[in-house]
Amino acid sequence: MTHPLRLTVNGHPHDVHLEDPRPTLLDVLRDRLGLTGTKKGCDRGQCGACTVLVDGRRVNSCLTLALSVDGAEITTIEGLARNGSLHPVQAAFVAHDGFQCGYCTPGQIMSAVGLIAEGGAGDDPARIREGMSGNLCRCAAYPGIAEAVRDAQQRMAKSDGEPA
Image (tube, rainbow, N blue to C red):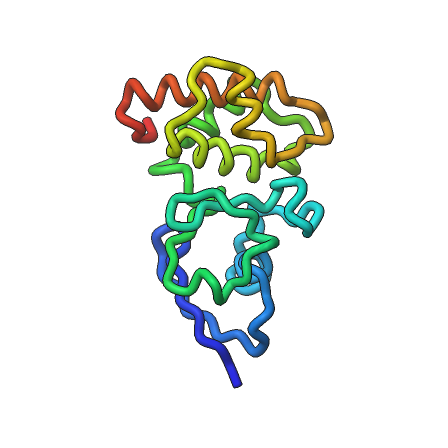
């Protein structure tokens, strides 16, 4: 018996047939759809490296059963850039050196995009850190990440939230 799954990932529809109902969204994205930008970190929902947006909300894809998001719209790191231009959050991470090894960066960026969409965290560094607290960076690039989030949300507010 197969389990049909329909996802719209980064604007593209995908029909997947799962032989087993237990694969996570992370595994479907990486192994079935070849979208390896989303990283498998702890595989326990503790590090946030696997953060993606499901219908605009941040989720740890390693803790999300793929079948539970049947019909959902998924955004991964591969879906942020538009027409060859980085998303404002991606550009801010580059400008503020919000990454070091880069392994957690996709999850950090997706979490920042979600945080900003949720209403942001204003200019308060403590609120930004709290809003990003589900994402760990082993390289301790937190000052650059917090500055990137603050900068990106200011730029997006000026441009009505649209990527430049």
